[in-house]
Amino acid sequence: MRTRRLITLLLGVWLGGSIFMMFVATQNFRTVDRLLVSPPDPANKWIAQIGHDNSRMLLRYMASEQNRLYFSGWEWAQIALGTILTAFVYFSPRAGRPALILAGLMLVVAVAQATLLTPRIIGLGRTIDFLPQELQTPERSEFWRLHHFYSGLEVFKLVLGLGLSVLFVWDRRNSLRVRNVNAIDHAHHGHVNR
Image (cartoon, rainbow, N blue to C red; front, side, top):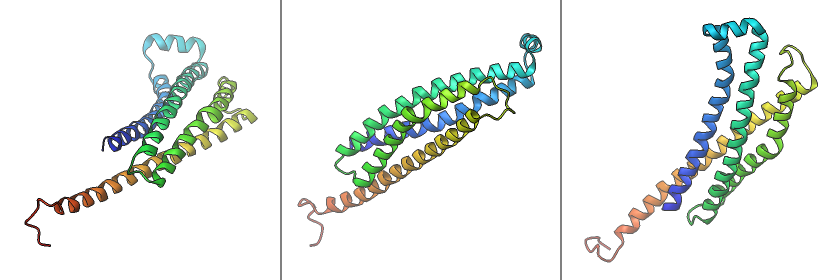
């Protein structure tokens, strides 16, 4: 029973962390635009000196660097969570093969993101950070292609996690039903007609 609780705790932390990171990544960039719409007076003087477009580019660069740091750290945390989760699922007496496959796939996706996609996305992002947004380059096209693929993998990982959650909830309900039926069949329940 403790193993099941640890598995659901790890799964909840993983899924909650992933959803939170999606929120953080989008809000970092939206904050730049919100700030530039109505900057405080001291910032307004600096923005006027370097220009609105240059200020936006610089602030978006800062937001990008923050996202790069957050995502890199979160991906390695996911690998740790995924390794522990998969080990608990593997050694859980009630978890079946489907649960192990889902946990393993989540871990594989996290490893692929951290080792293959993110380093390439970060490298491409840094090459296009200070280019005008309207300028289309092969690097920018590849960046967005990889970014969309990464986002698709993130959604896939969430679906796998929700599937794993459903397996544990469904299995828990069945195990409670079996446990209640078996509890009646004990020898000290003499009032049960046989």
